[in-house]
Length: 117
Length: 165
Image (cartoon, rainbow over all chains, first blue to last red; front, side, top):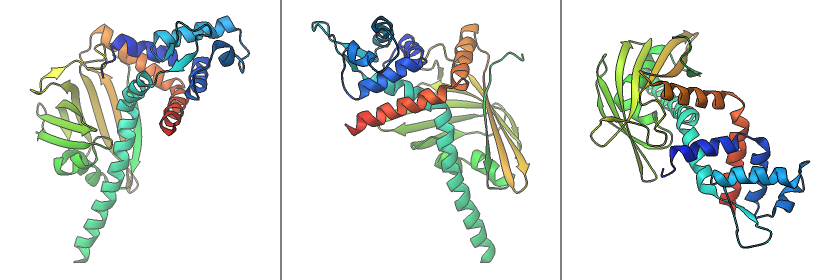
């Protein structure tokens, strides 16, 4: 909840791109260098580096400054915040309506009971 | 007026309209389903135009307060309310996560017969919003409508993988 709104917008911007989501997926398996990240992509290393920069700016990825390879690593909290934010809408109602379904079942059953008494 | 961005969904319920209406307007029932997987407490519920519904949701130690003001109440047909995040004194406040999000969101719920089932439609739109708020809402609606689900699924996968580690 401490995420500033600007940061959240950057997170959404960063996540909007399929290559960047694929990079995050790769990093979910563990930290990796640009070379390692770029390997499965039909894309130059500088292009991958640019995507990494966007992810880094959004706070989704951190990179070691002192090491030559500058391995990149996933930071989960901003992702969790972004999911939490979206959850506030569609999932709020989807899940609530699932609960409402169950309640309606109960009401239906109790009305039947009353009629049989 | 037509360019007000809207976000809506439809849902069918296996219940006659009267029962569906009851689950929305009887606080003793409403608190049992409203809010995903959280403890919902309804502090007040005054079902008439101008009346308010003060709602508290708690989940994993987090507390969310919101205040709804009813605009229109047509029994078993239509429920319209303006929703805002609220502070501890139940005063409407800007959304803590996104100050540009409309401070007031108009929610229109309609109930219609569909055989012995009920078709419920729910529409949100910004209410008395500033241009910046309307733009923020439109942007989010666009993102959610435009293939966002695919990306959302991937984020879920990533988070699941992280939790598994």
